[in-house]
Length: 77
Image (cartoon, rainbow, N blue to C red; front, side, top):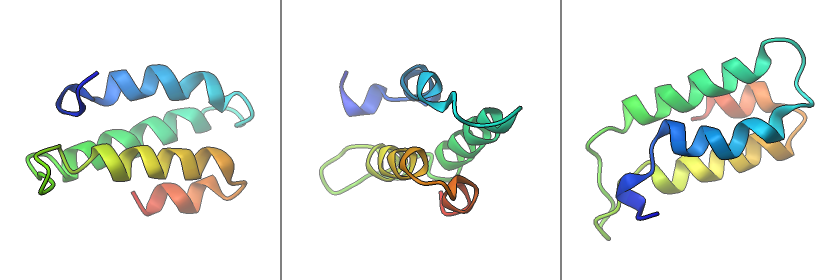
């Protein structure tokens, strides 16, 4: 998928299955953090022309998923 077509539903479909270790409704907090990151960076473009959110969004999600301290990682998005 071209980076300009990456959006919350696209990333969420790939991330949600990996969040089974989170208790209760915590996965929904991760989704809200992802939505906030997309909203905050809307319209920002990298020098390459890609939307700014493609790299930090994917990076932060991978960090959140690999860390036991996912709540603090989500605050950095």
